[in-house]
Image (cartoon, rainbow, N blue to C red; front, side, top):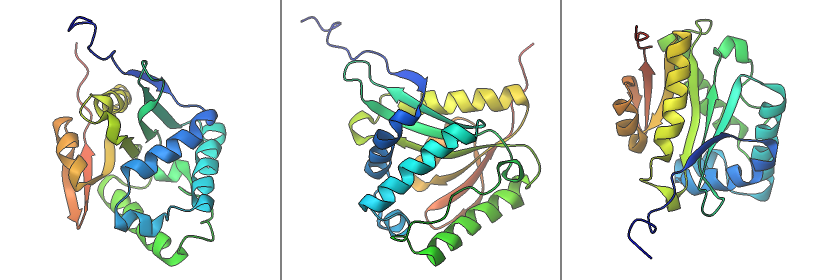
Length: 203
């Protein structure tokens, strides 16, 4: 085998489908396994089922909630995925369905209300903006450009629509998002609320 043939094939960006929900859920727990997040979304069979049903519902009933996946063509595995919300919070309506009984509703409500309040304060409830709701890369595929593909897609959509993009970034992800023009406008322990203004179209 030559050195050239040993190089991994480029990762491929695709839209996710309802059939992907179980693998996306497994990937979510691989990427977001911190004590703080597991206190909100505990890793139980019931909450995993809740995640799968939530994703399927979005894909089937919320056409502007776009789930994208990055696929490794060699193994067929999903290396990373993202959910881009291409609408304002007002247009979208409730972000989550009813919490699962395994989840602490007071903790979940407080977490969600904090995030939604930051987004409303920084970009407005009604002002159109695109929200990177989540982006997860499996630990087996870190540093292979998967996040770049997912970020570039959403940033290009925002630029074409001439609207800002918004994200609540982890400390680890903040550095990556800054490379794509996101600026932290508010911070709290473990989370940076970041906005990227649209870039002018090239003439």
